[in-house]
Image (cartoon, rainbow, N blue to C red; front, side, top):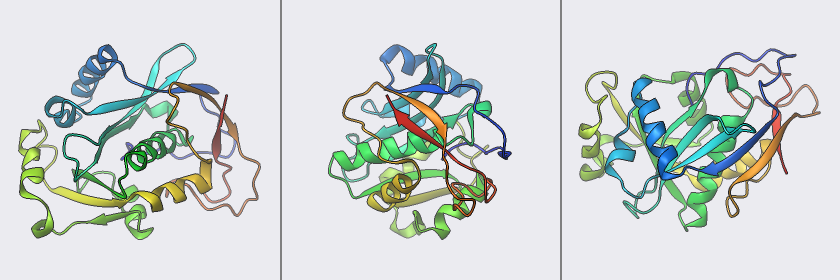
Length: 226
């Protein structure tokens, strides 16, 4: 899941208006691995799953401002989503949702109806609670989790330190996509890279929040593909 969100004010604007959604090249992947280490983020998926891929969000200048990992090949029975990150000044403008919706669309494209995620149960509590309440995520009981899949956590640099309580989740891919598309429309992952422009939506003030930290009445931003 995306990092802790900021509170969006009614007049705040994103630092940039135009972005690009793209797959990371091998060189970009290696560079982001270094950034993840400096941010004390887990790198287990990228290190141990050769088929793992990263989707990137870039500014017009080519600066990477967000990424999200996805793998549909390492364990064909358990497509996994991991390492969603958006730089702090770019959060709460639906950019994290663009990445998430793109990843779930990619998983669906490969014929999967269910995806999986693992994380520290104590982290990102408000967003996690929101998604559990909306039935976007379902927490798995420990006795139902595949042992080999769960054991991969022991190869994570955060295991037993920053991540003291591992939690495993099953995600209804179609339900998440429907939820996301109602807010920002469909994301085309067939023809990456794809540029887009963020525009504030003109919607009535009673719009449902995209995120528990987004105040009711704040007009969300939406990507318009170029």
